[in-house]
Length: 472
Image: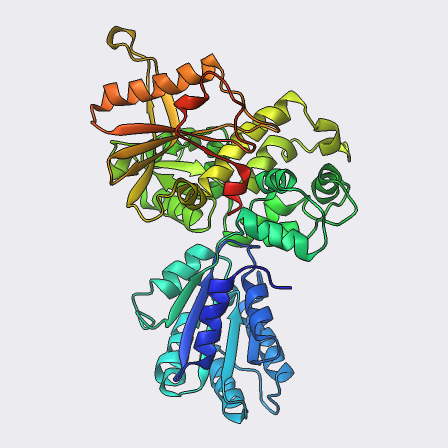
């Protein structure tokens, strides 16, 4: 059953019904559900579909392409010697089709583009010189290697420049979409459990597909990650190896960021990874960002060149915290419930989930229509100037001269705003105004699953965002 993806389904259906040939590119993080979306949307309406062969040579890719041509009805042809000849065979298949709309789906495009194969040139020729001139072709291309899709297809500066009719960047599920998915499979979980599962798996549908009804959340996590031969036991290695031909430099960056909650600048990352200051390093950062593993953001008042890179992929962070040590206890997660290291991890993981749901936070604040930008901010202690030293993980700077200073506190019950918490928020506000010298109004916001208890300091918080708001 296809859950969510309403906007993407609408685009695909409109391109199917539209006049003239259309070219659509779908991209996004590996395991996010790109292939599933397209296959579920079109089901039996494909004139032709083919998936690239991971790790194959040119001869392997052409052999598999021919097998797909035969599967869809093309007969009496010889194996092509190159991609130009292969696309000529695809033209023959399309010409012979009696369908009004010829839906062509090429999946894992980057795997077909082997070294020296001239695949992109052949694809350009197929679309520019032939398919685009017809009125009945819907060409859909897809790939998990997001950086390749961006460089070779979406931002192509050659023959495919500005040729796309639509591009769909498929994002991970939100908390609400994960809830819909769980309900569609008759798995009973409350919103707190879904939130905890999201902290581990993020919004990656493929990971959620391994959950089974009849088990508690800790039991499911044990089954998916910690059992002998668990389905996602080796996922970390497969994930990065499938995305990058030489994954080691990328993993070094990810590993360094996994140790720094708030992230690092490019210069800090160069030192931490002992890497050369080169364009290749910048490219790796851009590729990790485009694949959804990193987010790039600015600290308030800092220039773009001092931007911070933060590891935001929930699964990767969970891996480094709990899986990298290869625990042998098959009931590891069930036995870790309420342990100090898990409780500490929950606080950090909740912050990441909040950063992935900023639009929901804005909606709850009623500021979706107000122009705003998100930043973090930090300063060091300076007793002589009365500066305490502060770290603000999320501040929403609004065009109406208000700053929402967001404090994110994970709790399994209503959160108590103590004198210590109140003083900490006041110090952050004071430090920010003193150091930056801005003349803006600061509204302290608390994001916590179950709201707050009534107390002496509750009134100092301007808004409270709860778990239900994050699920909106």
